[in-house]
Length: 76
Image (cartoon, rainbow, N blue to C red; front, side):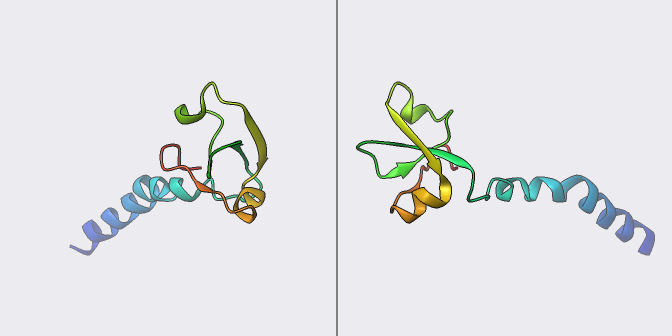
């Protein structure tokens, strides 16, 4: 019985745990994000909500300091 619990635990560590940390992988405040002249959110360059818009690149840290919040679509 102990062996199966250990096996499940090890499987969790090596197979499932890396996926849980993916959402935090981009939490680097120096990451480049993009803002538009009229928006209040910052975005990834690939975000569909800013396609065709004129954008300005800046660090996530700068965007936060200027009062921008993350886009709920691309979740930078």
